[in-house]
Image (tube, rainbow, N blue to C red; front, side, top):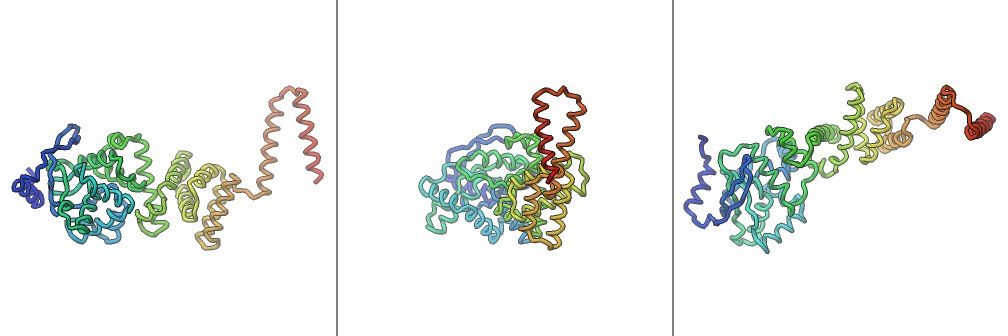
Length: 378
């Protein structure tokens, strides 16, 4: 049997000595595949701790840890205050709406905490209540209604509970895209099987794998563009939406059997393209155009020049845009010659097929001959 922590003992002692901590109500959860009705308690916020693994704010919390070069510990008052500020400042409009709701209606849904008092669901709610207490000194904001998970619930099961609860709450703001990817990584790191994770998130297994790959690309891009992994900046610049196209392109290049060095250079070229201000449509065009060897050569030429400082990012983008538009990577004369070669190839095929020359075909051939005669006189 595991030993109770001091925090768990303190919560239990409070409940035993304060009968009014029991609300007489219950909240239904699914725990390890079983439907369980858990009693709702009214606990002092001072007994509770923010969850640093909160999926909704993962990008900000992880970035803060990287800046501090250490793990956050919300049992530490200074760390708790930094986390509280993130929760309040992340979306001022959502915070304002939640604050107004708590003032007018109070707590309608209970939070979920571990036996030791870590808040699994209701972190922002607790942060807003703390803010209201600071503003008003009204004691009704000094409490959080919660259900307490059994003390033997695994980290994997806690993750599943958080996903089920937060993905199902319509009134909460949508997860930023980067946090969805970080949440998927967290689940995989905790050992949730891909098939089970996909079902939990309402996705296909291949989508979960693609999302995992997208996060790796985002981290690689962040190191390329910012010199470090900065999830907050990724979110602010909305890189997640763009990187989806990069992931598709890399998957396509890999399936085409291209060598790793070429794929890596194509990846870096796309990263530079993103830095220069391209859109997801530009990256789609990049993936389509890269079929032609001359295109790849033109991409790499522009990439080499911008990295050496021979051209600036604006000119780099213009060159890549031009290549995408032409779809060949050839200059105007080369493109014209390519058109003639293609016409010749098709006429040769037509000739080799020994097609019966109908009056209509003869008429078209004469018109083609006339055009060629005129062109040759130029």
